[in-house]
Image (tube, rainbow, N blue to C red; front, side, top):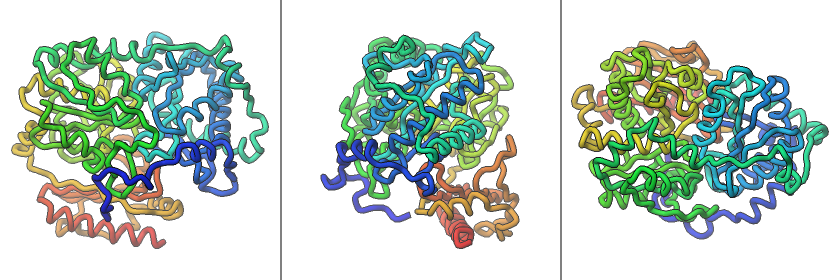
Length: 549
């Protein structure tokens, strides 16, 4: 993985997004559905793309919105639709387009008061709160979040959350994707739409106080009293994201000593430091993107950041700096289960196949069932909804947990709660999560982990996703006998979209990105960096062979 010389530095002026040109392209450029790259395509978390590339334009949003309307009618979903958007430049135009279609269909739309930005977890929380106690689909709510998550400033994104409150499963997204592409092929014939001003005045368009509904409920998922009593000095960097206005009310309501590092919203994201590949990306798990907060770590007992829609987290400690996501997930699991006595004795731990083996070891020590699934938070939704999974996390810094009483909080990732959980852990343990992870390594060993990314065409991504265990010629991995080669997840036998090869003390997984034209190799070794490097090198040979066809 070649690191850009710009990585970790402020972006040069020439790199900054021309917002006016991007929004013009959103309305002016017409995608061609005969070109595969320009069709609607739901990845691991909705449809994403850029208007410059004709992969996220008004036509896409019109078609997807109409398809969602038709899906709701087919499923008999008659409750309100909670609609939120983040701070990317394309999010407001796309939200406007969606409102015009949803209102034309007579759907009860729940928009934020004052047209405020709305984090993904606040939308999931709103859906679950509304649906609690309701059992018939006719009255159930669902939602849309307009966000490309942490992706670069020129990206737009559109994701649908059904009444379960979390990301839609592949059966739902495939149906919506197919209908949307059919609509585009017909030149949008059949898409109903009314002018935006008329849509806002419609009797079916309502305002919802996402912020206060969410903030006032936080004490039911996080021990806010413990944080306040510990008197911790907290720092938060919203990275110019949708939760920028949530942190001050959280501090005020729960009497926290919390400093907002910056409340600037700038759609060029010029305040970010450049990510590893020379692009601006609001990734709170990247040390290159997180230079601002890392540089301030000595000012706070603990600090944290969230990405643009606030579904991902990053934790910065005095002891270790930016904590790798896998390290923090292991510490969170170690802390939560002994401190949540109302969680069921059978509540398990959800992880993806590319997350650290440290999670397996901590879960086994706690006597908790491990639920290992493919990448994608949709695989955790059912377990969070029924309380059979107490904590679920991904190596890409997305996670959520149950309420303290063992019921569902959100069924989508929640960066705000995971940030506050870091403060709870320090308040209760008297040591920061970095120090606590050090204690885990003393008990279980110190794994070396890496994730390598490289460009891949859509055709190459398809070949890698279809790779079977029989096609992987690998008897040894870094000198150890291979114990398993899988292309299905242990918990649910769902395809992992690639392969995972495991030996006694190390493993790798290779899969295409669901959101970008990249492939990813994840690897881990409990025998140190040298063995890890060998694993990555051998994995790259296997992947290169697969991509060559």
